[in-house]
Structure formats: structure tokens, C-alpha cells
Image (cartoon, rainbow, N blue to C red):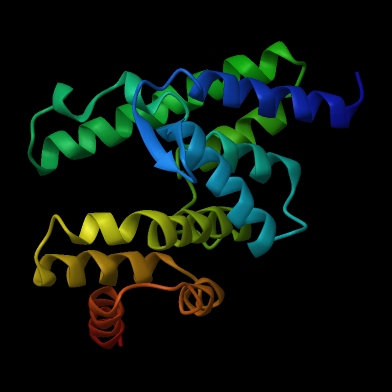
Length: 199
């Protein structure tokens, strides 16, 4: 099996796993498993944002939320502490699934560890280009596909604070890219407020 074939097989296995997500999202007239759609959006955004991304980064983007539905949010206390516990357990879950799939197709330990490190966000604040690129793509996908719906569930003050924190995670390049994403007038105004608060 060539490196290209192995890569394609693992991407397909990631997608097969996410195909099991019982939660569906309407997209272009079809009902698509939520995490499968998210994975595809991550890949598409990474391809446009960093066309020369290394293989391990492309793999990490594709399995960012793999199996997420298997650990529901309501299995942890519905407070800040419970949220953080849930997020940490999800990281372990994503890493375990990615490890198992990649190892079954003969990926070496170094590549597997790089993918797991990105999924676990281990170097998020160490200014590593690959970690920052993945975080940028996560934020851009959120803004493009999920922010509008998210905004209907929260008041303006909370949204401005969430957006401020989101912008803080993003590089200057990503913030520039975000400015090209079409959003509603309300969301555009909230992003503007968040930018002002970030200065």
C-alpha cells in the first residue's frame, strides 16, 4: 500500500466512523450525520487556508470531533467544571479512536503522536504553526457554519464575550479570513464589538 493509499483509507475510516452519528444536520437538501459534515467542513477549510498542510495536520482536521456523540454533554454536570471535564474526556476519546484507526493501517508512532497532540491541543499556547493552523480552521468553521444558529440561543453580551475569546485564539491571518465570511447584520455587529474589546 502506498502512502497515498494509506492516507485515503484512513480518511475513509474516519468518515465511516462519523457516519454512525445519529444526529443529523440538513445540508444542501440532504440529512447528513452531524460529525461527518463537520469533518468534511474542517477538511475543506484547511485545504483553502493552508493548501500545503502536512499530512498529520490534514488527518487531525478530519478526525477533530470523531465519535463526539458517544459522550453526550449531559453525562457531566451542567456547569463550568462539568463542561471542562466533558471536553477533556472528549479529547481522550478522539485520540483513542484516531490512534486505533491509524495504527491499523500502519502509521508510525511519530505521526500518530502528532495527530493526537493536535487533538489534545497540547501545544495550543506554544505558538506552534500546526497547532495554530488547526485552531484557526476550527474557529473559521465555527464562524461560517455554526455561529448564526449559536447566536439565536444567547444574548448579545454573552456572545460578544465568546467571540472575543474566539478571536483571541486566532492568528491575524485567520481574523482576516473571517472578515470575508458572510454573516448577518447582528452577528457582524457583535464581531465588531468583540474586536473592539480585544484591542
